[in-house]
Length: 527
Image (cartoon, rainbow, N blue to C red; front, side, top):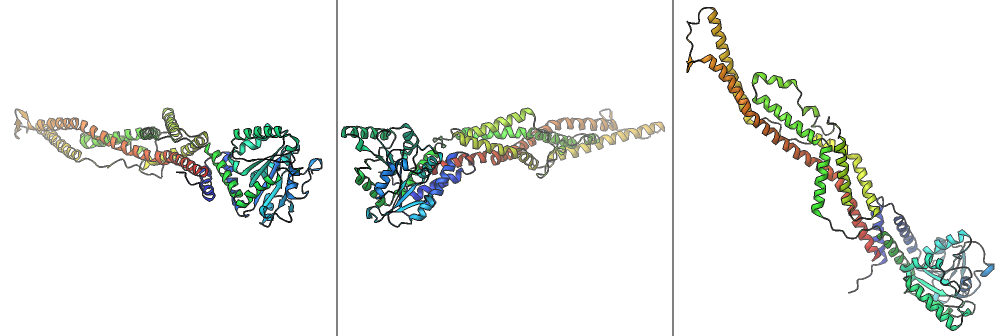
C-alpha cells in the first residue's frame, strides 16, 4: 500500500521543527539554508497562486528570442543588442496579483500580454540574464531567481547542450526538482532530422543519468516557431494545475531535508548495560575528584575518636580533645558554603577528565561530526559548573545519624563505675598509708580476698577491668566506624551521581534526544 504523500503544510512544519531543534545546537550552513527556505515559503504562499516560470540559459542559446515568441512581442532584446544589466524581464498573462509577486522577486521590467491567452492565464514568464555572462552581477541574479521561481525552463542549444558547467552547476543539483523543471533544446532548425534525433537522445541520456528522468525535453526553433505550441501546452498544463508553486516548495523542502539528513546518524541501538557502566564510572571518578575518599576517611576517624571517648578510660578521655575532630575541620553541613576539602590532585583530575570524555563519546556514538561537536560544547559547559556543584553536593550531604550507640553509652557508664572502683581502692590505700604513719594500722582491720587486700584488689581490678573493657570495645568501635564510613560513602556517591546526572549525563542525553527529534522531523520533511 502506497503511503500518502505529506502535504506541503505538514512538510514545512516538520522542516521548521527540525530548524528549531537545531537552533543553537548545529553550527552548519544547511540549517541557515533551511531557515531561508521557510522564510521564502511563507512569503511565496502569501502572494497567490500565479505560476512563475523562468527561462534560463547561456549566451547565444536563443533564450530571449524564445521569450519574445512566447510573449508575442519583442519584450527582451536578443543577441548583441541585449542590455548589459543584470535585470530580468517579465511578461504577465492575466490578473493574479503579479505586481506584488514581481516586487517580491525584484523584477522591475514588466510587460502585460494583451490579449492574454486564457490557457496561460496566471503565467508570469521571466527572461533571466545569461548564466555565463562575463558580468558577475548577472550570474548572481540568475542564481538568486533560480532559487525563487516556481518552474525553471532551461534553454540549451545544439552546440552547448552537453556543457559540463551547465550540467554540474545547475541541472544535476536539481535532481530532486525534476517535476518543476523543463529542458528546451532550442535551434533544432539548424540540424537535420537525424542529427536532431541523435542530439535529443544524447541529451535524454545525460538528464537520466543526472536523476532528471521525469524532466520533459521540448525541441524548439524560436525563429521558425517550431515546437512553440508544445512548449505552450507544457506551460499551460503547469499553469492550469495551479500547483507549480506548491510543487517547487515541496521539492525545495525535500532538498533541504536531504541536506540536513547528512547530519543524522543511522539508527544505533543503545546498550543499556554499557550506559549504566559509563554512568557508574563517571560517578566514581567525580566522587574521587570531589574529595569523597577524604570525607569518608574523616567520617571513620571521627567515629573512632568519638567511640574511643565513650569507651576509653574516663580519666584519659580529655587527651583526645587536644586534637580537632577530623570531620569538623572539613566544614561540612552547609550547602551554601565552601568546604575545606583539598583540591583534586593530578591523578583525580585526569581520572575525571577521562570519565567525562568517555561519557561524551558514549553519548555521541555513531553521531555525525556536527552533533559530536555539540556534545563537546555541552560537556565543556557542564565542566565549568561541575567543581562548584560537586563541592555543594558534598557539603550538603547527610552523612547519617550523628548519635552515640547505646552500647557505647553503656560501656562508657561501666567505665566510670570501674574508674570509681579503682579510685575507691586508691583512696583506701592512701588512708591505710596515713594510718600507718599514725601507728593506727592495727586498729582498723584490713579485709582480704584470697589473701589479697581488698583496696589493692579494687584499685588493680578497676584499672585492669577498664583497660580490658577498652581493648574489647576497640574492635567494635572500629567496626561501627567502618559501617558509618560505608553509609557516608554510599550517600556521598549517590549525591555525586545526582550531580553527574544533572550536570553531565542529562545534558548529553538531552543533546542526543534533540538529535533524534531533529532527525525524525527531517525524515518527515523529506518523505
